[in-house]
Length: 210
Image (cartoon, rainbow, N blue to C red; front, side, top):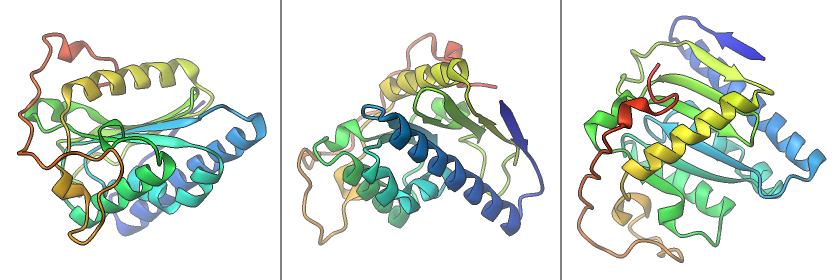
């Protein structure tokens, strides 16, 4: 089933979009609890930590943790910093034993920005938004949710895996507050990692381009 939501990009639309993501995550948590799914997971490809799916994940942290859900994210932009740290804290809380390198990556190569924002939850639900290069206030407000759609979720997960491999580490200073303690498995303090070279078949990734 595919749900299409579209309207002018207003505060009311943004709130409605957030509510829709909260509802989707709530449904995912309920299904995970009912089925006893082993290590259910979410993956996100987002413009920034200020994107709606990230904000919904942050708001649902406790419920997701109770259901044993884990999550990982790829971001095109590291600003806003406060939201980035909140997202990283959430990802770390959902996977307390995982290193930072397994939780979050940075699609810093400009050629990667044509990828569309994306969320997958488990094996049968995914969401697709606008291209990551589009300014948050100028993007196409067409939002696609695919529910009970294992084929769409499978292709979305393949796109995430491909983009993860072409992305790079997020420098530690962007993830931790100045007074915060260094989490287990976090990055060593090194200079920014170089841009990861693109594979020649990047334009052929599923769901990376619409």
